[in-house]
Image 1 (cartoon, helix red, strand yellow):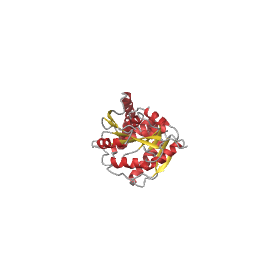
Image 2 (spheres, rainbow, N blue to C red; image 1 turned 180 degrees about the horizontal axis):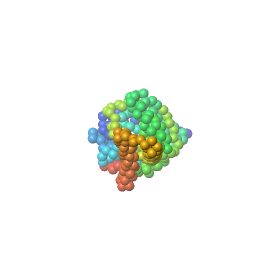
Image 3 (cartoon, rainbow, N blue to C red; image 1 turned 90 degrees about the vertical axis):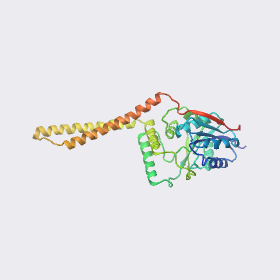
Image 4 (cartoon, rainbow, N blue to C red; image 1 turned 45 degrees about the vertical axis):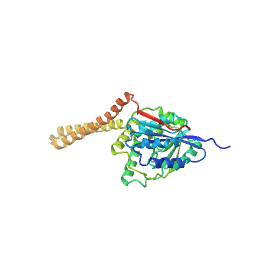
Length: 318
């Protein structure tokens, strides 16, 4: 007896993807034109300034069961992913696949992900097989970032595990229940748990356009990653301050003993100035770190929604 077809919702965040969105849709439709998979799209327009929505809207009649969720402005990819998962919960599906529209994530890997999910996994991660296409500087910074996250957080985050993954419905419902403002979705995947599997996938070069992640957003994402899942930086600041305080006290006792025992006067305005500047810098760093946590607590306390929807464009019925 043949296995019942599974309904897969393809969540696609978009930001100025008009130049390549038609090629993306064609390639996904071709890759999933296999027995046992019924596919529908959930496009999320994250405040695009080009005609991305218009191009997708023209394709909706040929994509039964699909929809476009248009946000009121650009809220960032993390919020767009949440909007896509929320949108998927409003349609009938068995699992969700999240994929970027720039074709760096090869759609041909989705049938393998579905088979792995059918074997009993709740989450199937399309792990990046190699970073050979990245520049040397990007590879170094990426490795450093993941080492930092692993050292400061109790949540396991593996280098190469991105947003290209399949999530079963219980996982989607769990992620949608987490409504925090400062989202680091890669950490939330690990936090919710469930049974996870990985398949190695060779990522492609970007088909059109350039990366939408500027340096400032990458730094903000790194801060979210550290502050969302750990208070270790605050503990490290306390430990570092305690060590400096103890060293300063020992040095003061030594100077007092040396002066009383030998009657020496210790000049050293330059060293005193350097010490004051060093301690002042450490204090400002600690205050800034504390301010990051307090500021994020303040924002979360307002309970604003992570995103706002301008309109939802429904496609043809399945």
